Each structure stands twice: as structure tokens, then as C-alpha cells.
Image (cartoon, rainbow, N blue to C red):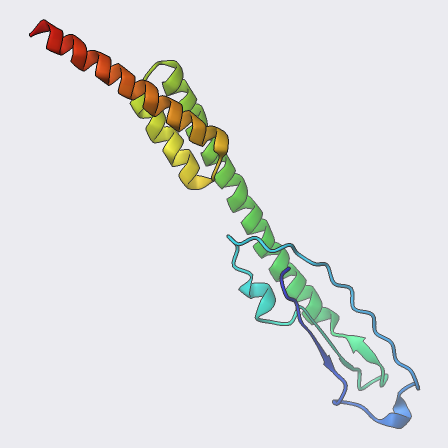
Length: 153
């Protein structure tokens, strides 16, 4: 999971006579499952929320301006990550489709190239199996061609 931190400042503005005997503050944290391909520094290197004693009321309260700003920064970043993932998936599908088209036209060399481009984007057992199949057929075809050429001479 991705680490998130909160800052609770209970020193600034604190005067015992100004504070209720019990002050509660409830953090609300949504956890994010870690993806190894994503840099989470924007979340982990700065607090996602701050609370402090309000000098006006003497109560511990959230710094909503800071929390809102951090939430917007993180949301924008996560949307960028989602967009990049969609683009990556679209590129993967494009390479697979081009590989399939080449395979169906019996252009196995091009199919291999496209399939290898696809698995460089994302590992996929089905595509890896298609590469093995295309390479096998390509080798057989080349062997047949060289046998025909040697028989002609």
C-alpha cells in the first residue's frame, strides 16, 4: 500500500483553559494499492492532511485549505497515471491487432515484430504463445524455401 502521512500540530495555539477536556478529530484516509510502475512521491513525500489547534476556537481542527489543495494535486496526478495507463493499453492493443493482421496475411516476420512490441508494453502469455507460433511457422517456411532453392541447383 502507498504510505500517507498526516500532521497534527497540538502545540501551536494551545491553552489548556481554552480547550474542551476531550477534542476528537477523525482522519478519513483512502488507501491506494501500490502499482510498481507508478511513482508515488507526490503522496508519500508530503502530508496529505494537516490538523492544528485553531487559535480562534482553541479546538483541534483540520486545515481544510491545505487538505483540499493536496487532494486536488493527488487527484490530478492519479488522473494522469490513469490516462497514461489507458494510452499504454491502447498502444498494446494496436500492436496486437497489427500483429494479428500480419499473421493472418502470413507475414510472420512482421507479426513477430508487432507481437514483440506488444509484449514490451505489457507481458501477455497469449501474445508470447503467438510469437512462438509465428517463429515456428516462419522457420518452417524459410526451411521449405531453402530446400526448393537447393533442389533447383
